[in-house]
Length: 392
Image (tube, rainbow, N blue to C red; front, side, top):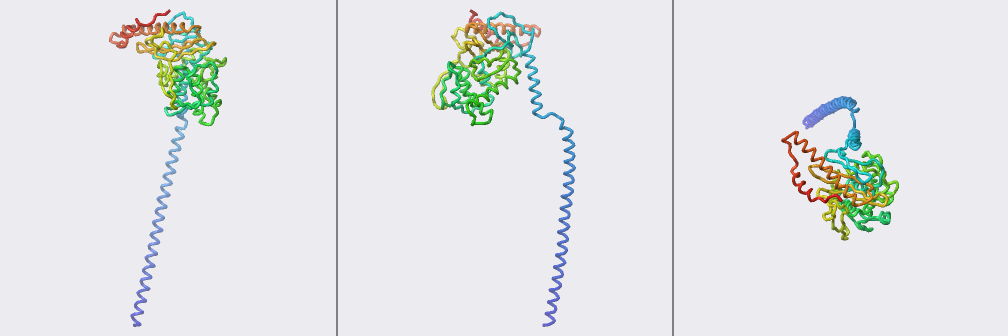
């Protein structure tokens, strides 16, 4: 028994020694593994540092390149230079005409060429043709989901204004507001547009009506300046007469060309009538006062496509008008006419002169290149021309 007990003790000691040896070896292996991991991590960090140094060096090589905003600004400046060149043409206008309207521009927007002008850089009062810019800014800053709720800005509408009949609490969507500006020429719509869009521009829904409208008017002036307008200053969104609210025929043409970036504006200006219900349910009807697009008006012009009329006692009769023929769009800005009939007659006469010039140019080019195609609409246009009203 004593020998067996001694043998068992020896076996237990041997096992403890073996276990201790195993633990020592295992510990050494763990330490070695940790050292390997740390070494690999350190080598990785060194590689990352090298990569960062290389990237930093590459960044320093390209950091002098212009930023996207600088490129955008440069493109804008280049565009402004080109627009200035187009609208500053001197002695290069192919049409000569004697007209009564004091301030006038005829522009071929397809070929980007002024065809005729008269005192186009002289300051004049634009009346409701101002609303073309108002509508363009609505289209720029508001989306189809924007709800325009009439509020305290309606108290800012001047007595004697043309109205779309918008009352406080009524709600319109964006396209309704644009139509309310362009068809009945609603000054109430102009202030509604200015208040809502002014808050959008300021990113502050809590702005009072007065402050929001001022933000909008400031944006009108900023936009005009960015377009290269040199004789323009706005004080209100509707064009109601103010001695400090003025533009020129050439500046207003710049603004009109800008509005063409927003098809909603041109589409609205081409409508003769609209029946609708406000978002709050009220039924309303609006008609366009532009006789050039109204059949049976006595001044209907078959190629006319829009845009906007205006009139105050001080501004006289004004119009921005567009027409298309022979694959070209012509745009007229006419300000300060003493008589509404003369306003329309002279637009028709100058449109005819402009399209006659374009047709002559096309025929000349066709003669030089016999295989050149002539616009399909030419024959149809000639037939329609026979039906166009004669100038009184």
